[in-house]
Image 1 (tube, rainbow, N blue to C red):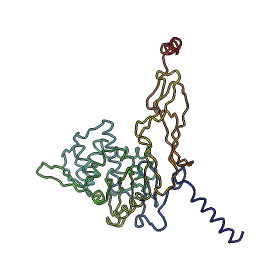
Image 2 (tube, helix red, strand yellow):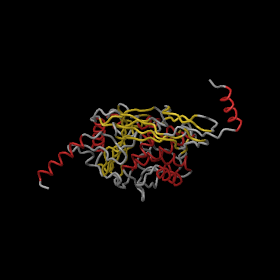
Image 3 (cartoon, rainbow, N blue to C red):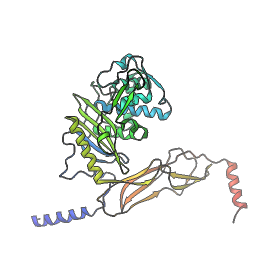
Image 4 (cartoon, rainbow, N blue to C red):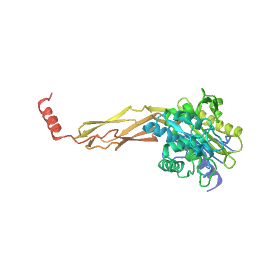
Length: 395
């Protein structure tokens, strides 16, 4: 085939590709910045993710195992807020600083041995001041000791599919066998953001500890983006001489929440600038389209011989899809795929069907639909009453 025919075939292929609907199907590569946009050029590793769908919009060596420094504390905060949600601890509970917790160097809130603060105050100290001492105090409160808490951290990381991560402490101080990746940090950041109350701490620029005491401690957020970038409200900075300057940041505008992670930046100015550029790119190129709110009923399934005759299929969390702003006018539609009837018993969390979302004819997202509560088999008496009611009360 001569060069003329090769050029003609290539032109046809490019024209056909441009006509395809834009979306994020299973296995499809995420949209990348154009050739004139270089994101995070100074970072050793980076990732940009949509927090709602988990779609990766940009990545650079995102699975490289690197020291995460104080970004480690995202997992410490995650286990803390999960314990609060479970009722294991309360924000008003007191946490006593041990000799060991008070001995931590680096960033700290200068806890004295035996000093007590509430869980609420410890979260402020971890999120805003990156307190190594506050992190260890919380670890000891939740795990009994830091090593036991670190085991909890690694268990949770495995549950989240963080395959590039191993924790050796709860605060990120330099130690052997302590590493993570930009991808894994984005994953645990996304999980932390599911707890809406966390941005009360990570998004505050300044606050006080011991405010009414003789030694008030002024907190200023180490993440300056929460003050200078519109929509930024977290999450966690990090620095050691080995890790260099790191950041897991989040920002939200017009319903679109983003997570940007950079590791190994040369200084804070470049770190913040490159994260800001990543946010600018995503906010200019993408939008989120809401489909269902949490609890919205999507459809129903009849239950044969169940103590309840109908199962409602509801959204377990807000359902939304990410779309490119430059996409064509292809409509976003959805289709419920589920059986008309199922037989009792039905287990809680049993997979019943799925919601398939389309842009035009192109599948861009699928949501599993599960039973939100169990349905037992109806008793013979219940079935008898149903049968007789049909016999005697027919229109």
